[in-house]
Image 1 (cartoon, one colour):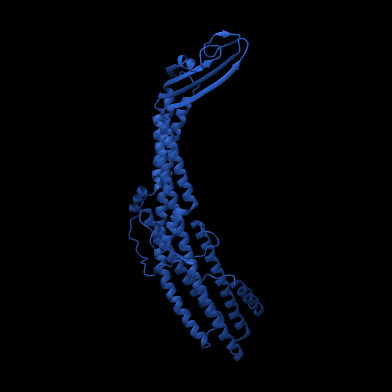
Image 2: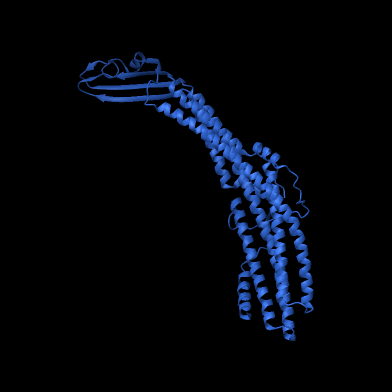
Length: 443
């Protein structure tokens, strides 16, 4: 037992040199508000959603431009010999011909089953949807930051508990050594005190490692480089944690109006309905206006190059009408598919509403539970603390064994950890309920 305690003490002492969460003078202290503001501007998930919105805006502008006429210029130079047709005069000749053609063509769609207008409207809907998807990405980052930030604070306070236990157990080892030398306790009691001190030192290292893991997760959300050290602000101890006076149905109603997921679903249905209008346009004819101007030169004509370009100048304008008669049921199939897609979008909306309700219901029930647990944990912690203090006094007077003292300390430690867990869960779920209603997160 003694050998175990000595080895464990040596190992954890070596590891302790590599674990230190004490902030330096150059370490920036981040509040939750700082984290949220920074992440909104720098998180790659949010940036990706913003780029998707930019693409949707480009698609919308491209759809609007489809109503404009196009314009193309063309030019050709040809050489031929033998029996051929003059490309300018269309005469059949046997001489060598050197000819030049230049021109400009343009076309515009006058009517295409209203597909162009419907496409523009659909792309506008998709642009609006992308804006809400960007907001949803931001909300997800905010919630992730809230959870990670509170977990980091919880682990940070866990370090304090572990360090206090270590200090107490090291003092107990000194007392045990004095009592062992005086012959008032057995060697097993002394080694048990050593073992508890080694265990507490291990717990300190473990607590510091947990804290650093959450710091890494926080830096990942903030997109900070590994070399940058950060520290976080602690909770305002004057916060009123027992304050849940909300109706979950009211929260759910507000969440449906606030959370972008619902509007994303609504716009998805609108987009699918517009897609149906687009494919139905395939049943209707297409009317286009085409025009061109041009001129040319041929070497078999004795006139000069400039003269030929003058009298060969031509203009053309034409209307073209395309009437769909039978396209192998392609349009009919597209219409059926679009109708099914609308039904799927409506089901997806119902699923989204259920997910929102689950979020609200879960957060509300967890808030109620954690609030009650906090009251119980606070009373338990106070009782365990008093019991541990009495146990320490008895141990100092020799009226308590090392085993009983260790049990009392562990009971107090568990009570402290239960209180911390209840405290941070209460903060988390209260803030989630506030966020679901459109209120700012404030801790």
